[in-house]
Amino acid sequence: MASPLHDSVLAARTRIDAAARAAGREPASVRMLLATKTQDAATVLDAVASALEIAAARGDDTPVLLGENRVQELVEKAPALTDLVAAGRLDVHMIGTLQRNKVNQMLATVTGMESVDRLSVAQAVAARCVRDGRVLDVMVQVNVSEEDTKAGVAPSDAVALATQVAALEGLRLTGFLTIGARSDDDAVVRAGFARLRAVRAEVLASGAPGTDDAHELSMGMSTDLELAVAEGATIVRVGTAVFGARPPL
Ligand SMILES: *Cc1c(COP(=O)(O)O)cnc(C)c1O
Image 1: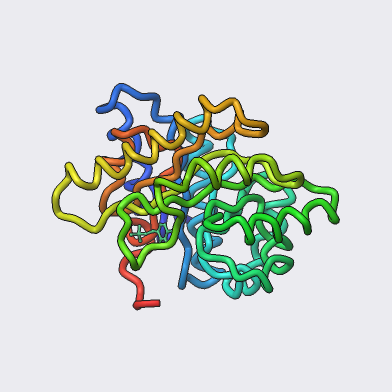
Image 2 (image 1 turned 90 degrees about the horizontal axis):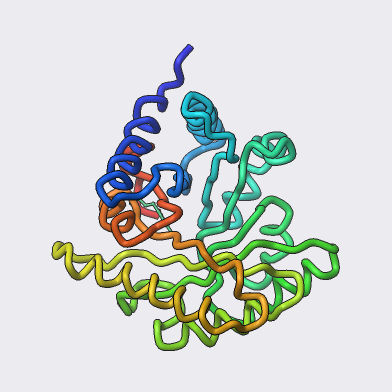
């Protein structure tokens, strides 16, 4: 039986594909991340099953990607997700601010972290990874719009933080995340995404140790994904477009 979320997952994927084609890019070069905050485990599993089915139909065998903002929600949903993660069919990324006392709980479930915004957090995660004999894929979160309400390192400090994170044993720097400016002006939103792309270029050009793999641009959400794909997003994070409106956090 078709899952209730099948149509909305397919519609989101179709939007991403169309945006990629409009930008002269391969649809497969943009990964869709399901942003599952506030959704219960059954709903998340339903969306993942749909995403797997839709991916299979397009001949895409990369794992489905899911993002959580809070460790508490990761812990609650972990039992439902571990088999899919172990089977290599699901990647789970932390996309929210991490408190240092929750590092171990986060690491029990995630396959990556996109929201590294301070060196102290990166160091705490790295130390635990070294102890566990693993290497975690991480991205640096940059606050391109410099709005006070948004997490992330200031653009002027982003290259320095990224090179410090890249040098840490236990972590692999894979790219950058941002949340688009809250603006009705597409040009303002696009300029922010272009700024993240410029940070990536500067980090890759630095030749600093550990920066070679920093290619990902995780940017664009339900309302601005077309703009982000036009500016080079490699991961687009969709919540409401798939799950509908959620109660305020
Ligand atoms: C909630 C959230 C999303 C998804 O936002 P929508 O507007 O619901 O698509 C993406 N990224 C982050 C970091 C989020 O917290």
